[in-house]
Amino acid sequence: MAIILTSVEEGRAELLRRIGDARHIAAFTGAGISTESGIPDFRSKNTAWTRNPPIPFNEFMASETTRMESWRRKFAMDDSMKDVAPNIGHYAIARLVADDRIHAVITQNIDGLHEASGVPFDKIIELHGNGTYAKCLGCGVRHELSAVRRKFEASNRAPTCLCGGVIKTATIAFGQSMPEKEMQRAHAATLQCDLMLAIGSSLVVYPAAGFPVLAKENGADLIIINREETALDSIADVIIRAGIGEVLEPFAQRDRLN
Ligand code: NAD
Image (tube, rainbow, N blue to C red; front, side, top):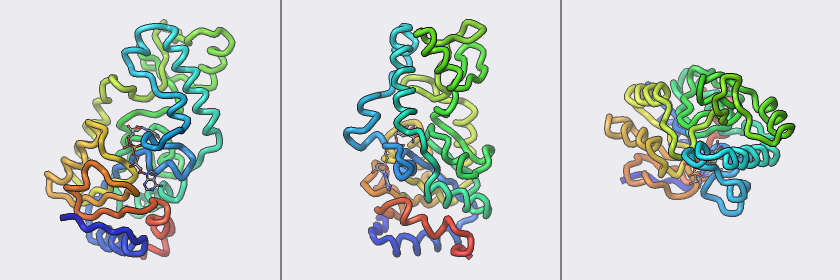
C-alpha cells in the first residue's frame, strides 16, 4: 500500500529522507513538470493542444497537405509558447543532478526544458524526441525551425531536405517507432536505479510508462509526484499529491539540501 501525502511539508520531508537514503536515482518526467512554465499538458481541457492536436505519423507521411497542416499547428503552438523557460521543478532536478543524486533524467517531454535548466545533455533521455528542432527523415540531418519556417512561409509548401527527404520536427509522433538508443539508455538507467521519481505524468502513455513499472519489478522504490491520480498509483511506494513546484522548491537550492 502506497503512502499518500497531500501535505506539501510532509511530501518534502519524505522526499528528502528517501533521496538521502538512495544510491542511484532516476527521474522520469512528463508534461506536468512543464505546466508551471506555461506549456499545457494533454489532460487539461481547452488548451492550445486542443486547438492544434499533434498529427499521427502515418497521416503526416501520407500527404503533403497534412504535412503543411502539421507545420501550421507546430508554428501556432510555438507562437503561443514563445517565452517559455524552465521552472522550479526543472531547476530542482538540475540541482539534484549536479549534486550527483539523480543519475539520469528520462523524459517524455519534447520541450527541451531539462537541458535549458542546466542538466547535462548526456544525463537526459528524451523518449519522445525534441520539438525545438527538426530532422530529415531520409538522411537524418538536423534542420533549425527558424529556417524551416522561413521556407514554409515563403513557398507555402512542406519543406524538404536537400537530399529530397521529408523534414519533420525531431519528435516521436503517435505511431512512429520509439528511438532505439534512447530506449536502451532508459532501460539501463531504470535497471540501475534504486529509486525512481515519477514527476508530472499520468503514466498512461506506453512504452514510456513501462519504465516505472520495470523499476518496481527490479526492486527499486517508486515515488510519484502528481497532483492527480495516475495509472501506476497502485504500485507506488509513496505518492505526493501536490503541485510539483511547491514540493520541489527546497531541492532547487543547494544549501537547503545539506
Ligand atoms: P499527461 O498530460 O498525460 O499528464 C500530466 C500529469 O501531470 C497530469 O496527471 C496532471 O494532473 C499532472 N500535472 C500537471 N501539472 C502539474 C503540476 N504543476 N503539479 C503536479 N502535477 C501536475 O502527460 P504525460 O504523462 O507526459 O503524457 C503526455 C504525452 O504528451 C507525453 O508523451 C509527452 O511527450 C507529450 N506532451 C509533452 C509536453 C511537453 O513537452 N511539455 C506537453 C504536452 C504533452
